[in-house]
Image 1 (cartoon, each protein chain N blue to C red):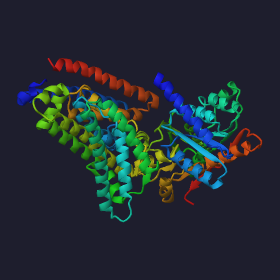
Image 2: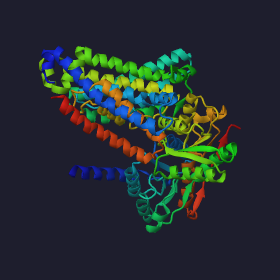
Image 3: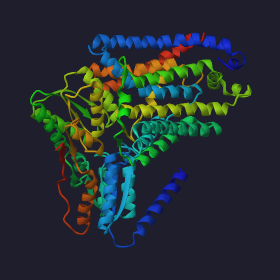
Image 4: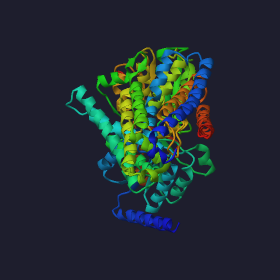
Length: 332
Length: 306
């Protein structure tokens, strides 16, 4: 796909969705193979409780990875999401424990506080890296430190606790065994999928990843599109903070260390190209599942922590190598 | 490179200025801690600052690290303190081996060095010919207190798991060994032992999966309270109230959990006072007292609902 997306978007879009189906089929098969393997070798893997556990456990990573997909599609990266999540959680934790509010107001306040914090950090990342055309790698590395420091400063390095009971309930409630927080993540995936495939904005993000200059020459405000991609990523970090708080009923300023790497891994395993312009959020969903299933299954199988870490690394590399071949064959 | 040298020279100059600024005869104590992102050390710093104000007869210079594995900044801090000519260095080493050589240099410069929180490695001390006392809690003994509480509750054959701290960290090792001592003494059945890197969310995930693999778990020993919170949340979502949890550190967030029985016990090692106590000991030596020897144990206490 090149600049022709702009001149004839409809056929390019059709071709791309066929291609993305092919891509996702590969990742889906890999996921299926993993599930099959663990089902055969452990007795507890394919039980309703464990499936609920896996869904709960991948939720935060999935939420972060959805936002990360937008940034990676335009050829950027956001290393700050783990820290921004912690910062948003701490700000929201301060808000929710403010005296003088009923539970409903306190929860609403916390949700607003978390998303506003995330969005603000995202706007900063986007504006600074797009305005001066600086590598987002280094700008978001700066933000990684700013947000972590801010989280520690705001919380005085203390864990914030005792949230309203209703919030706790939301974090652990289920619909037919599916955690509500996972449904929130799934909704984000669907909205992202719609935006990326069926809006001009979404298609142009792919265009920016492929050929930024062409999109600019076609008269589109590339600057604002890039800022929007980073803002979406910050927004999802804010949502992840809410999920974290609802699930654990605390806000910890040291939460989310290294989460950015897991989110990036989910996106890349999901077949999105690190250089931008190619990939899909459905792939990201499958990528998050692969990471989650692996983390869960390897514990059930009784593998030691160190072996587990090594195998996770190997799987990431295999996924990317496979993606190289998949990209080679599907682009013919 | 040139820029770096200029920066280094400027930094040394500043350090010297800072040193000579302490012209009054109050002794200067350099306090080197681990990550201030850790609640434990943050509280310790607050405790030390309050102590400085209260005693009023010494000047405190405190330094922390960026994260738990940033040894470099601790070594730099020791070197800066030597340049500034402080009277005593009170240090919680991030690495029990890497810190021995720089501290030896400080002792050679006539600075009173007190090692607290985590003991320097005995072999490394011998190799470098350093004789240095340790002021600190018995992490192993503390973990055994918590483990014993669990053992007494469950009785012989109780099925337990351990949630460990960072692999390779000395206090994580000591606490794991303490838990294992309890396992041996009370003839508990240790089903699994895994790290959750001191972190709540990871402990929640790791423990949920352990519980799936071993639904018959009866007790959990978590190497810190942040991880114990993650375990308690996992038990709540699994609807299990028959599993006994113990932690370590006594952070405020676990107070309500111990009160209402979601946790059986935790261990308080009085981190807030630890730096302050070590500073007292260091000042004693600075004023001509006898040098410290061996292991000066600081108090630890089992915290339960009553």
